[in-house]
Amino acid sequence: MITKPKGCKDIYGMDAKVWKYIERIIDSFMEKYNYGYLRTPIFESSELYHRGVGESSDIVTKETYDFLDRGKRNMTLRPEGTAGVVRSYIENKMYGDSNPVKLYYNGTMYRYERPQAGRERELTQFGAEVLGSDDPIIDAEIISLAYQIFTTLGLKNITVHINSLGDQDSRSKYRDALVRYIAPHINDFCDDCKIRISKNPLRILDCKIDSKNEIFKNVPKITDYLNDESKARFEKVKEYLDILKVPYIVDSKIVRGLDYYNHTVFEFMIDIEQLGNQNVIGAGGRYNGLCEQLGGPSTPGIGFASGIDRILVAMEQQKVDINIKDEIDLFLMYVNEEEKKYAIYLAQELRLNGFCVDTEYTSRSLKGQFKQADRMNAKFTAVLNSEDLDNNEIKIKNNKTKEEEIISLDALIFYLDEKLENEDEILNYDFEDCECSTEECHCHNNHEED
Image (cartoon, rainbow, N blue to C red):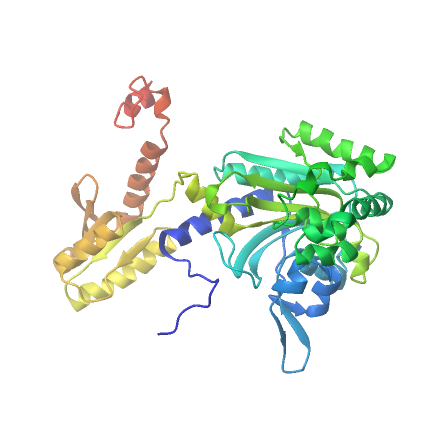
């Protein structure tokens, strides 16, 4: 038997419905915040990620899926979204458009790492990027956008951790101070950190292996090395977050794992036992030099990314109640060939008029078709009878109340419209306004009369 690759999974059934629900929430918020959708290739030139993500990052040194194509070109499966977005921004000359350019993506990424809860080798990330504005208000908007998506999905106990890496001058001074502090103790750190201290010492603060090292208790804080301009900028970001009512914690240990970040960096953390130390469900920051690094014009940028796999784990752990209707409007049944032909014709007509309709495809008996309708949670069922069809009629049954009616085929669309609309009104009725305060109450009819 052929099985799926390690670190990959199939998404189907109710999991697929929840997945699509999450994507609809994402799309809705991106539309409201005026972010345009961008789809970039799943594989790109390896150089893009070496130059964009950074030679010293774990993604490039350990986790990328690299291959030679038939033209002997070095290619890499997409490990993250930002570099591809910036490449597209440059290649398609979006900088000629009115700035800022606000984009979002939602697609698969590939990282060769040990699979664990919410962290697969094939993962799906969504994210947003803003190119062309250095205003701190955009930093606050990006953080707020992600926060609103998470809370609307029903996630609880999310904490926003923010920090500033400052400009190049501030970061350089902090880098020197950090090296002076850690160098005498470097032999107490993991092998990766021993390499990082010469290539990118800020990455040591992001190390999951050495996160409990006693040395970190008195490590210099980057906020102490920010120049006046960087400090003022960070204060503005916090001021705008206060206006947007986004709660946050200033966390000097947030540095992010990619080389291109500067100024504002942030992480969204959630206390979920199954995620362990990897309790970050989204993160991002500002990358004002990345566009030039990839051969484009000087362009400020900021963005965030979040893994849908990790969101699903968090929603399951917090038992988030999702209102997903796993049902259809109508199931059409039949016995003979002529009724079968009419069933597929009628199903098509009703589908084109907006109804969710299914019928029989495996030659089940009528008893078996009733069972199939129950498995599909059909709101209504109809047994197509040749005699009724000759009279231009159809017998339809409400599968919940068990009431049956014979109606004209010409009136079927109007009948379903009315019945389904009334059912939706009952389901959506605010029972808190009713004196009975129970979902079994039927006094909404009296309320309508009032």
